[in-house]
Length: 538
Image (cartoon, rainbow, N blue to C red; front, side):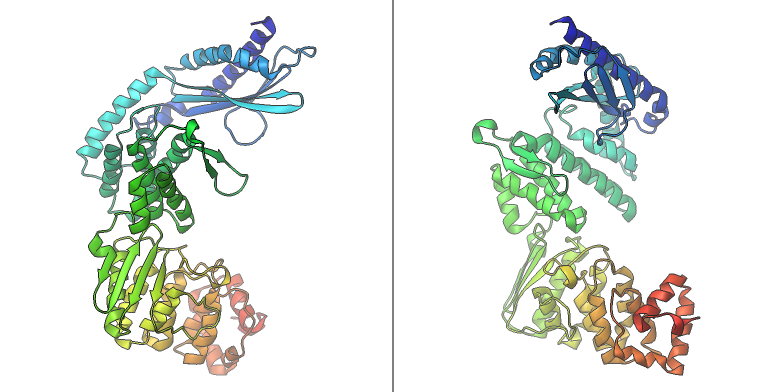
C-alpha cells in the first residue's frame, strides 16, 4: 500500500480518536452504567466523512449536522481518491480502528459492541459504506456474566416487579447475535412472558416493559434477521419495503428464528397501537413466505393466544369466530333473536376482557340490516351488528358492559370505517344506548372523555340526533355541552336555538362555570353554538 493511503488511514484514525476522547470527556459514563449491570457501555456508534484530507466525525447517525470533530489532515489535490483506493485501504483502516476501540476496554464510555460508518467523496459523488462492526471480548464476557446473574436472581427466581431500564437492555441483549450467536428462542420467549407476569400489577409500568420488549423484537427483525432474506428499501417517509431475495442469495432460515419472527409479529399486534398492526401482520406473512407452516396456521386461525373455547363458538342460533391477528370477529346469525345477539355479545366481551386487540371489526352476517338513526356513520358490518342488538332492550345491560370494555383504550378504532366516518370502539353501542334512555347519559359522558376529537368527528352528527331525541333541558344541557367540547368544525344547528331561553341560558352558564374551563374552551363552545362568544360571557 502506498504512503498516500496509509496517511489517509492515519488521518481518519486520528480524527476518530479525537472524537472518542471528546465523548469520554463529555459523557458521565461511570454513573450511567452504574444504574444497571446490564449496560456495558454508553456509546456504540460513530461515523466520519472524508474528503481530500478533511475528516468530519459525528457521534450519531442522524443527518448531516455540524460535525462533533473536524480534523485537517494531509491534502492530496493531485491524487483524488477512488473506490479502488478505498477498497485497498479498508483492511488497514479496520485494523487501526479496532486497535483504537480495544484501548477503551477498561472505560465504560464505549459499549461491548461498536460500529463505524464512513462516507467518502469521489468524483463529486458520495460513497457510503460500513467500515467496522466489532465487539470487545472483555466487555462481552463481563456482560454475559451479569445477564446470567440477573436471569437467575430477578427472573427465574423472581417474585417482584423488575425495573424498566433492566428490561430495556435485557430484551435487546437476549436476541443480539453478537452476544448469543445461537438464540434459544423458547427460553427468550419464556423470559419475556415472565417479565410481563412480574409486572402485571401496574398497568402503566407493564406497558413500558411491553414496549421495550416489542421495540427490541422489531429492531431484531428489521435490522438483524430479515436483511439476510430480503432486500430492504427504507423510504424517507413510511414503512420499510421488503423484496424477497432470489433463492441462490439466501439460505433456508432456522425454524426457531421463524418462530421468533412470528412471536415478534404477535407481540406487536397484541401490545402496540393499531397503527403498528400492519407491521405485526407483515412479520407473520414474511415467516409464511420463508416456509413457516406455523405462520400459515396463525394467519388462518389466530395467534394461539386465546383458547379454541374462547375464539370459537357455535350453536343452533349463531356462529362466532375471532382472529386476533387480523382483529376480526366473524358473527353469523342463523336465527335473528335476542338470545342469539346476547350470545354474540358475551363472546365479544369475553375476548375483550382477555386483551383481544382493542381495534377490530365485526363482520356481521345477518338478514336484519338495521343502522343507527345518525347521519354520517359508516354503513359497516360493525355498526349493523350493534344496531341490530339495540332492537332488544333486554340486551342493554350487556351492551353497556361491552361499551365500558371497548372504551378503556385510547387512540383505537373500528377497522371497517375510515376518514370522516372514523369511530373509536364503543361508539355505536354508546350512541344507541344514549338515544334510547337517559340512564345511559353517564356512559355517554365516559365515552366523550376518551374521544380523540382531532381524528374523529362522528360525534358532530350524533349531537343533532341527540337533541331531536331528548330536547334541550336541565337533564340534557350537561351532555350537550360535553358533546360540543368534542365537536369539530360544525355549523350552528337550529336545534341549539332553544338554549337562548332565559332558563336554559342560566343552566348553560352554570354548568360551564362548574367546569372551570379556560377562556379558549368557552370561546370554542360559543363558536359552535352561535359562531361568536358574546352570548356566553360568564
